[in-house]
Image (tube, rainbow, N blue to C red; front, top):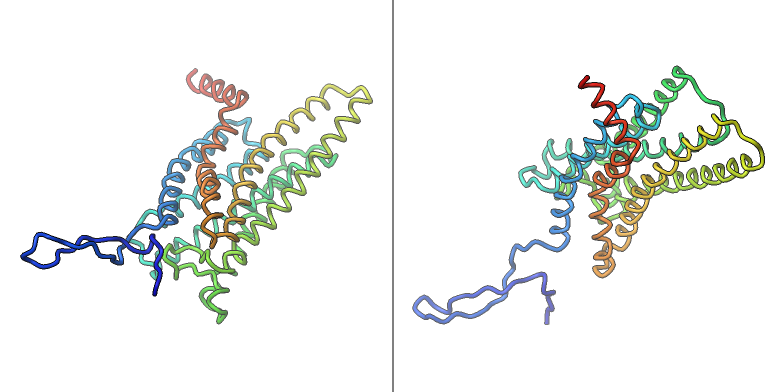
Length: 322
């Protein structure tokens, strides 16, 4: 006897014959939305809700001169990558007229992959820059800052491009087994094949390494802050040194919260990848998936709706109107 799960069939009323008013209830193979498909659609709309808040944050950090520093520009680049990635992923999740094996499907998939990877490398840049600023090095002038930002840009966009080239070569030109290929352009969503080891090789693996590196740098930065605070408590510190330390501490606290938003949610994504075949465990991670999709709103709350930034926006508005 063959047992079928309740989610794999439906009951359909069927007339016994054309002249009879009675009908029987028979099992049938119905085209029903699975729970995972429903979750993907919900996450798609959550991303649509989140994207405008990312764009608003980008606009604020570009229009306010005081926010166009090293950290602000890195944050804008990070948000640019994640917002474009989310926009394209929304199209893949919600649009039904993209043919899975066509050229547009592949272009959507590869472009989405590039911008997601660039976003993670920019988050890595933010972590490194915070750690570098607390190492005790002297301040840099405007020329050095531009040079450093150029190097950061080459690292972030260049690393993402290298991963993209490797992924395209593996998918289009290698004779590797199917389970080791990315699956972009060949799956049902034009995205990476998330049910085998290719997702770990091309996406979750690099992300995990970046998250671990970011965690190490944040811990080292926190230890350095504690050390500097303790040293300043022993001596009479200059006023400008105290002010600089306070400013850097504020930046660290702000980007630490960004790291937690990204690190925790994407770590949950990696864990859910490993337990994805277990329906009981996978349901637990639906909430983290939703939080991940909503991170644009969370970032807006964190980086724009704070007292200092609102004050800068007010001053900028007054100057423009006057």
